[in-house]
Image 1 (cartoon, rainbow, N blue to C red):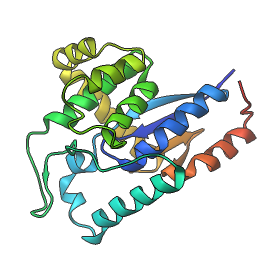
Image 2: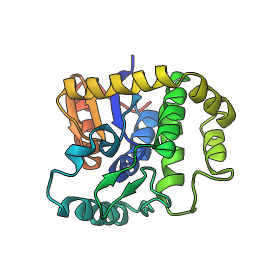
Image 3: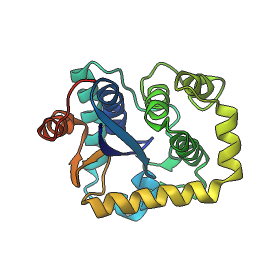
Image 4: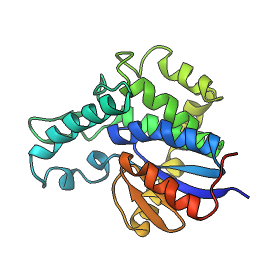
Length: 216
């Protein structure tokens, strides 16, 4: 019987992007079922917290995530446009967040169809790989959905029709992440143990192997 784990993930996190494809490959190659748990970005979830830390932190995150992508051989560029509408210099997050709310809601609709991991991987590539500008326009998301075995029109319709329930599911994911002992993404929770960061994949795999993980 396969093992099971939960992957807490944000569509705005470069580190989530750097991890998602590797966790997807792990789930395909090894005897573990990884359930995607989408959370709102910290900028939307708690903007006050975002701006109370060291002002050097955002600059470092961008620099480090680009370096990690280069090290891992994963193409990465900061999204154009940013999924979160933000005046960076003023330290202000816009009240209306159409891009991130749409992508999180359709992502959660994909989770309902048990294709969350594949959808998050394909969409994250569109957002972060640097292959396209204006990832939210044209057929970029529709083609990503097709690659994940889904239909974007259906996902968008569900996101509009059932927004409140989808938002509640995302909020429940955030509560579960906190209960598991962490607050950041990407965090994989296996057997009650959180593994935070894109650089914890090998350690998580090591722990799973202790519990019987083998190749499929």
